[in-house]
Length: 127
Length: 396
Ligand SMILES: Cc1ncc(COP(=O)(O)O)c(C=O)c1O
Ligand SMILES: [Zn+2]
Image 1: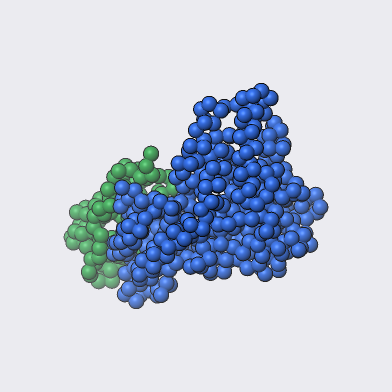
Image 2: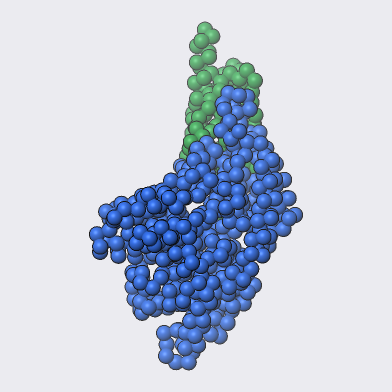
């Protein structure tokens, strides 16, 4: 059996939403180079809807595929839905991840939460 | 198309080795312990293989015992020396920080049993100095174990000098020569080696078979108890087909060491030259005192597993010391031992050659690695931080 599902490999080979959003409404970066995976998520939010999401990831195939899938899952969704996204949902959408790779997908959930915190922070500053 | 560049992990069996095994998988099936003619036929083959392997190492056949591979040979060598040491009240062992886990984990076990282990540091060039060994030897040192050549970065250790020091100081010396056997000249007598481990699948022989050389006078302890095979030092009916394959493979490899080394090191140096063109990349381990077929690089700003998988898509089989390939959170202990920090140790790539690789394959590989590194850097937040000056490059 291959290490990764077809879905993971597909998202790894053709990741969606790679890149940067200039003047993003929320940015979240998690992980560190010590553990081997770093994920940075950029959000464009209008009227409480995630208009656009992009990512940059330093990490393994699982980390890259999770970033790709997570950004797909939140695009066009209300902020409340995006903040409820779990790493479990990301892993399931990828048809599962090997047990020792789950920690790489947790970063996607955390990065989105952090980007939303950043967004709320900016909002309250703006008031 | 497949370009196999993971020969340090395992090699393809040579035709010679396969042919040497076939009769013993088919018509010559006797048990060497049986007294009848079928058994004796097998016993003769076993003797013959032992002599041929011994000859490649420069020792008599009776100093060779067959094991299930390199790991078992390492375990047996270390545990035997430890037990012999303990009987004399000597419970200190010296090794290096970048040994194979077959050595390090065996020593961890001994530590739990009250042994003290000194892990010698490794210089950035991936080489341990004989003086370090000399300085570390104590009254109660019972064993020094230093690998012949490192499996990740290929660096070759000054074995003869270390052996000479151990001989002078009366300490048993073991070397894990799993990566060296069949690739580098070995003469256990000339190099002052008391015990040496080797494994057939690293030199185009079969998997699951290896050997332990132990000089006469070194007391060996059996790990597997049972029958009197291998002079009581390793019970179990011998794997004659594998042993025949190992003997043929080692003989063949040792017969063409210089020729193979010339060919491989030329390819290796081309590969190193090509990959060095990638900005912010660094060769791991000394450029010259390394196995003829070993190339190991770190590329800043990317992670090794994704690089491996991209290369696999392009038909290239390689290996990496990143944490994500090992299933642990830490990258390769070898890269950490030579002073590579976590950030760049995760971005390592090992390419290990065999005689079957061609110049075209090397040229293709250089192009493929350049493309893959560039692609991954393009999506890496670390790389962005580095090129924007937000963060400082570690590899200049
Ligand atoms: C240096 C070294 N020692 C020991 C081993 C273990 O050998 P084997 O796979 O035959 O148990 C290996 C191979 O993985 C190795 O490279
Ligand atoms: Zn990972």
